[in-house]
Length: 563
Image (cartoon, rainbow, N blue to C red; front, side):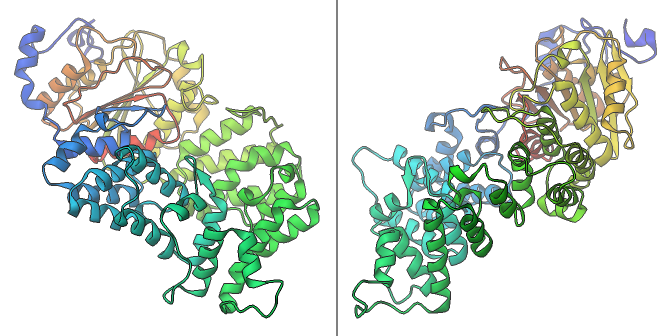
């Protein structure tokens, strides 16, 4: 039934509007609305690539293989002499945390370092320490550089010097922790890097702490220990002072724990030297005493990530002091704010913990009721961590039975109907202007308020009659009802249907009639890995294929116009 007959509800799937609101054929519509689609320039495509891993407006949850052929905009910018500008943009996106995956950042930096002109290469290597903040990033950058280099071409002086600076300019204590915590990645180790960059630990400009660290990296523990504690006690060695000796003792603890058999001594070293889980041999990772020692100084995100393991080994037993400690941390608003945990990530942690089994591997546990309640409370508290965008939203939600059939790609413990309800809650609680509608036999408005909990939102969705998914309908509904919307978001399990009006055509019509020429459309298909709907040349359209913990961040960047 047309909206004119119902007073402004659904728009039939076959009905199309021209610029005056009357019927029109598709060719006329496309021609008349071309003014409302702007071409995407190379810098915009680069930003897409940095955030999405693709120049097309589609975020795939599964990581796609990166290749220079998939970064044409990057190549175009380098050829146009804009390499320094590109490096600055890469650095900005990295430091501001705008990218959910580091691979695209490091790949793009490697392209600039290996394929750019002299000024671009210098800028890329200067930015290296600020972008590669942990050894894992450094190893990934080195591997990309290797893949991008010509066969047989070794490490040049600029490349070697940049890697040396990465080690030498870091805070010594952070470096000591990092090189022992992240020892190997992408087939690279610190000793491999030291050998290829001709690293020398000596030098008058090297501090006592850095001298010990470099000696450890270049020579390994046995030679380092023999240097400072030779069998011939008359052999001279460099004096390293109190700070250098403290670093030396830290390395001693890291090496000692690798061969220990006594649990008590492992706990002692954790407490004395702040060792972390990555330092502990696998054979001790089923020990309650060891995990208890690790838990005492564990950061919030690490604690949440390890709740499943600590529960499985019996550390988080009902009524235990450890459970009380965990619950107090989870319900501490200041700690949650400092950890900047997104509500969806907290909900994902809750659903995974409730499930009693990991998404991968064989780990199983019986969820602790107190911790489950604390995670739920933390989910609601974490909404305060989300900054509003100030935009006006319409969320169109698929309420079909298939939304409850299987888990989201990228978050298998969460069903699509729960994920979409959680995102609706986030919008209701953080944004001042919002509309919620459901796909049924027609577009049905939903009353979702900021004081509702998750179960109440799910109840509203479950009570709506099921119907077809026509992704053009939200824009046409907003058009007929004269709603001012900046962002349309469709949550569905699969982008399996649209009517005779293509969503991009409906979006163009809405822009034309509303005057909101930069109105955006996001289609989130949580279980689909098929075709997408977004127009590559329209900067106002985005497809999300699957739904993981990074998806909300990608959506925010898109809504704010950063990609």
